[in-house]
Image 1 (spheres, rainbow, N blue to C red):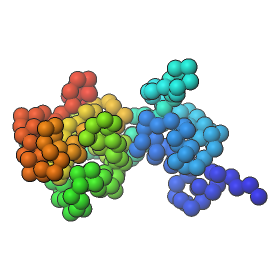
Image 2 (cartoon, rainbow, N blue to C red; image 1 turned 120 degrees about the horizontal axis):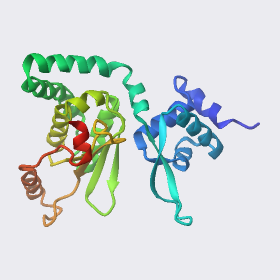
Image 3 (cartoon, helix red, strand yellow; image 1 turned 90 degrees about the horizontal axis):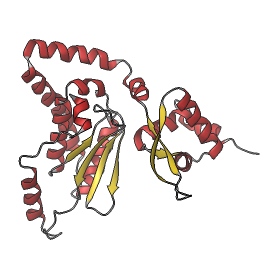
Image 4 (spheres, helix red, strand yellow; image 1 turned 90 degrees about the vertical axis):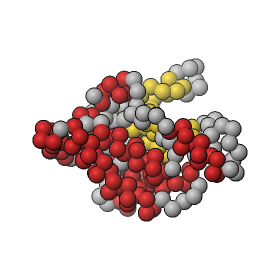
Length: 258
């Protein structure tokens, strides 16, 4: 008897349809191709195309042209979540939170917003510190990603080929629209990441700034010129590189956050 892939995958999850799982993967792993989605979910090409077409029709995913298939130079079709998908995940929280932040700024001024951002992130930082038990830098980043995912940030870790860096990617931000108006929230978060990981980190893009994912570059090896086994020197060198460094993304992304 032939088993339909969609039915087989949907039944165990219960609360999630296959379509929802496709969207979740696009949010967490985008830009991602239909072929990659099929492999991850064990779905046929026809099934993936059907779900992608449905999500595109509803304005939840869109094509992000990136890379090539290797076949006559034709661009690969890769998909990312749209702003509408992010809005649906926020579930109406953003507007209320933005009103609260506007009131806070009106009453206490910019310093009150900065203080609130630090306090808001401090609670998460304390919880994350308890689960970041690995001594290996790459493993600590992975533990941070898992903790962020549990809090709804849909985080993943991707290597940067040819470097001793990884990228921490957050496919969803519960306070995205608030952070677009108040980037102090992003600044406080990235400072917490640096403290938790014990190294300089650099945020390259944010959802609040209009990107499809928040991306943070994190070194997981010693800086150039420092022997791999000299942990003390490596740490000192990394701390030195953070002096005077601004963590907020630059260029168009930063402008979008103002």
